Length: 459
Image (cartoon, rainbow, N blue to C red; front, side, top):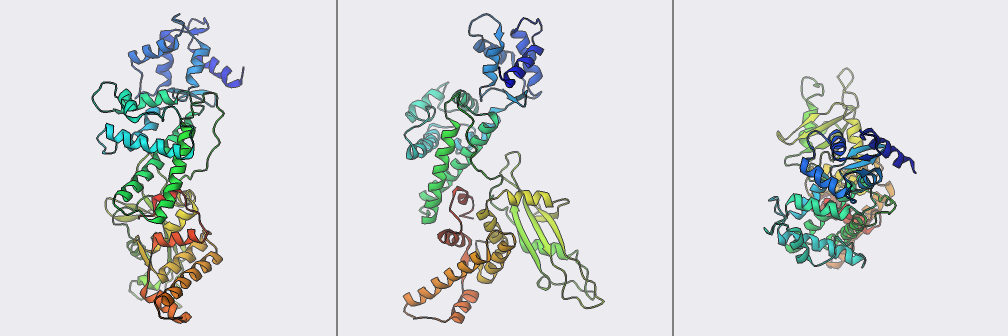
């Protein structure tokens, strides 16, 4: 007997009031009332259904082994964790996936929505392997008909949870792995939906197609891991996922507004406010790590304020300092964030390197979609400071762009141009779409396109 089995049996003995080595209906009710959260108790009917399902022999007594088999099922409401039984809210874990299927957000899944979403899952897996999990494969119409238990042409959230609870019962995953995989599948599905919409609008670019292939690959991989249908399977190898991801910036977010707020704290010079262009601030804005499943994530800012080199002797100078701010969506302004360093660093470090670079580009573009060459150079220098790219990467990128400019002159019949002409053109006449900057870095092999690109390529 392994240690976990022994610990579980010890727990059940605590609720075995008559000490007969089994758990009866009343003892199970007591156990569940103690283990379940106060706001999510099991009804008498639910306890009856569970007890009858576990009482396979009809003895009205549950063997400890039957209870252990139940709690070891990934879809059970109670799961072993560190030698204790803990509540696992599968319904809450499934909600992000249900919301993907519920495309119009009315709280139900229609036949058309199910066919569209489940078809995406089937096709993504089929493109990678012929081994499609039983809960995924099959005729879409017939599967929907089976899930529509009351024949009202809708699948409710409760129907969806019951379906998934049954589908996941044979999985070899822990509840933590399961919750993470459900979230990952929902995220990949959301990305596919986004690209599907671009395709319908005729706006899908070649670079988008590359990212979409990566998204579909990840969707197939996560789906097969989730619905693996192997009760005795060893825990899946952890696939690398990032703690944070890109999120669309809120309306009104503005770096210049942040800088002006900071200027108000800078001492006056000869009775006058120092102008924004007279000081150096290095700002980086990133989305905060998601909490409580909210989509409207706050954005954080790190501000490095460089010492006032322009102050003369005897004039007040402000000291170098680093400050942190959080953007207020409601009032469209920035607020100073006390003890914000750890939260900012965790959010930044939780992003992949390419998303970190995009956040720098977005910050230096003042949250626009294009930027000037000088601003781009400042952004790439900042990226070196954060060790996202190297100086060599920066130089290679510049040489690549300059080469494109030279070739365009030749292709248009203007012949060769000197370096000064190229520089003047870049600095005074050209702007650069942030997404195209990222694509160029990918084309150069500095970054590899992955599914995370789907979150920022159209922003």
